[in-house]
Length: 113
Length: 115
Image (cartoon, rainbow over all chains, first blue to last red; front, side, top):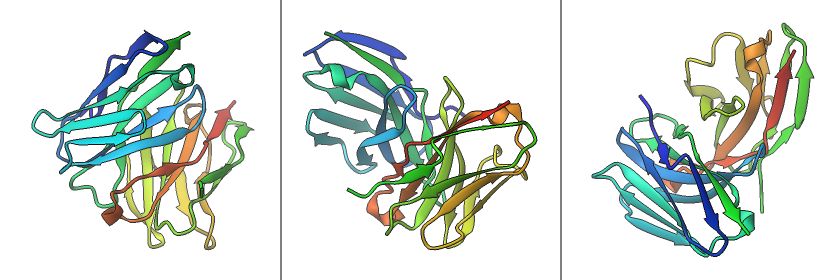
């Protein structure tokens, strides 16, 4: 089954605006993580939210988690050109023995100057 | 800040050849992982490793793949006889413990091209 599907697939906004990306998943989870990937590069961990948490902040990032809807959102406030990247959610399934995480397809975010 | 490192950054090989991808996880981490990302596709889980044995593996991780922690610092992924479809970016990751919230830290990746 598909897990961690992001929406939208691509997003283009003006610098300074806020960017919101959504993630939906299907199974019960222990946690949900958001990662950033610059083109062809490695995965940078942004934030982890546990299944018993509803909201978390880190700098300009705000993540929400709604386990009843099996969805999460990542908000980047006051976007900058350097935020241009792909953003992935990744879920840690509740009954996985060794904490593998399952990635979604990602949202490609472009920040226009 | 400690980070996961991977070598080489790029590797080109002929189909049928063996490749070994190397990773040095963060030093106090206990769980180790390999993922791969075929160009333009999702990041896919391959295998997890804990206490010197495989904890979980995906259907991608067939008999051509093996992992090893030959010493206290390195974690390797071997592909015995590479196929064209093995061309991908391979990421190593590590995490401290499940009870710490399972944040997985990824290395920069090895881009493997099989010709």
